[in-house]
Length: 125
Image (cartoon, rainbow, N blue to C red; front, side):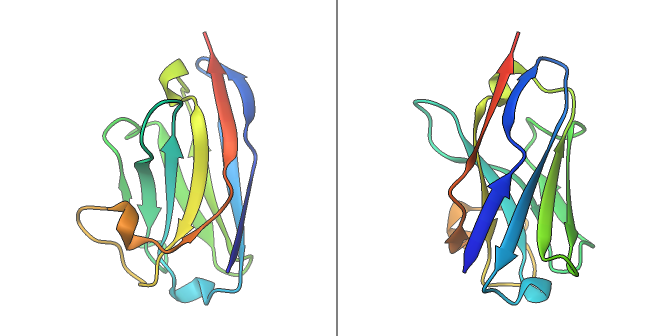
C-alpha cells in the first residue's frame, strides 16, 4: 500500500488547512481511514477516523468542532479539513489505513496497519 499526504505547511493561528491523502494498493472503498499526528517530543496521537463509506467518523476531543474528515472513494483520497488552527496543532500529520472497513468506538494506533510518510503542519501565534 502507498499513502501520500499533502497540504501541510505553515499557517497562522486561527487559519485553515486541508490535508489530502492519496491511497493506492488498498481496496480503498472497503478500508477505514484515519489521521494521526505527532508533535515534537510527544507520542503519535489519534486525530480523526472515518469508516469505509463515510457514514461514521470519530474525532479526538482536542479537535472536535474544528477538524473534519472526509473521503472520496472514487478518487481513493481521504481529507482532513482543519479550521481554527492553534499553535498546539503543530505536528507531523499521518494518514493511516485500516485492515477493517469500520472504525471502533475507541480508536487505537494499532487499528491501522498502513501509514504515510507524514506532512508537517506548523501553526504560528
